[in-house]
Length: 418
Image 1 (cartoon, rainbow, N blue to C red):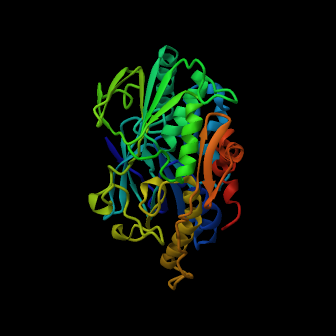
Image 2: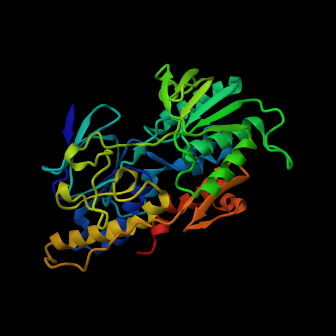
Image 3: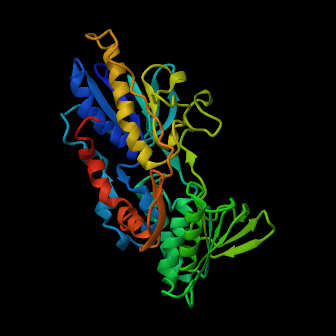
């Protein structure tokens, strides 16, 4: 059954997505855009998310092992509670999934947990739906209950596993291998390159010539050395050709699997984790608005979706404006919000003229990525400079960014207009 949102007097700024991009955009608009607009009480920011809680997704490689790894109240944060600080009526949260975007009539259909469909008219729209991970262990692909159930199933199977295969040589795959390796096998001593008696055989299958393609070869090689110290073997230049049963890893996280590689090698795994790439959450969007890789075709300078009509924007992993990375999202938030504020001023009754110039986003292309390998080691670079292992631990490896997410979810990070 469908129902239409009845808010004729409100200009709804709808944000699809409740993670880094969506939550940050909502806070920034409520702090620095809406209060400055004429008739500010006629605007309402609406966040739509399949989960009522936001989470620190980068922490999944360690969090999937045990709830004891992180304080759960910091790992998962209630979205509606984070917005109780704003004036009544200025914010609304809808727990649901966007299932159809009609950019011509400027409405989006939201399927609620009850099965009802709400048709939401929007005055402005931000598409921040992110991307789904191939393994349900490594992201909030649905809601928290689904993620936790996946973790529970995996944890129950983990003590009996003797072989684990992880497909993917990017950060998610390498971090997951490092965490599982250290947890199950320990770490080699000072003068050893491998654990003396590893309990579990862990193999990473990487399609490229080296792991961690965003980092320089020397750092990738150092990462392989650290992986070996926790009992992880890397197979480079090999691609997973097939997995039997097909549901192993992607649906059934505890299933045994036969993993066939394009080299002709077959690996038998007690547990299989696909950790290669992500899939943009854009199934509800018309194909003409998407790029060839199914991301939203976004103006790389303004973050507008020019082909969709006025006041429609995209940001984060779902957008084609930049490569997926949290630090790039945080740099893009002020640009998107400044341009939306300009667009809203242009269409307001009291401001027909241009409100300044567009802010221009420019992706930082310098080598920046940090990859913990277990609790004590890691490789990485920032702004083109290689980082020592201890600094990767200090910045990311000790808690996978949880030290940074509190101010972000609460909006304190956006207290000042940038």
